[in-house]
Figure 1 (tube, rainbow, N blue to C red):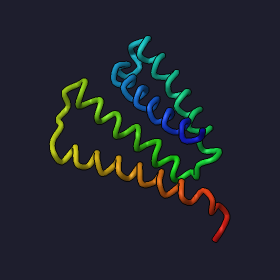
Figure 2 (cartoon, rainbow, N blue to C red):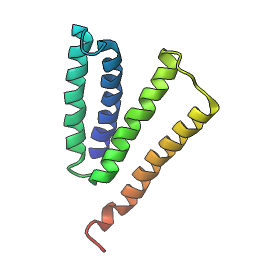
Figure 3 (cartoon, helix red, strand yellow):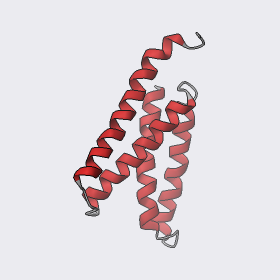
Figure 4 (cartoon, helix red, strand yellow):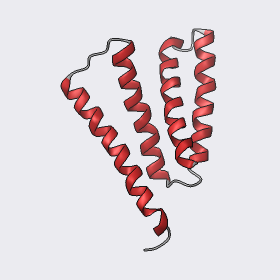
Length: 114
């Protein structure tokens, strides 16, 4: 369940990052309120995930989902430049996120063993 919390936290980070754009520096009431609500939801879910997932792995995946997702949404919805290099590095970032998940899953049974 911790991984579900972590993925949901990353997705809600995308929502509040986009909300920041629409809030125009917190000058627009509705987008600002939505942004604040999603910041709380995101960090609540993130904190739930960190009860079972190591902090370094959890934080890297949380921010990675948020960064990659926000960049992808920006390219799709806002027409931001989608160069080959940008797509390559987004794929590299996503590969790192998946790799951390796979490595952490293999290490779960070894917790505390040195």
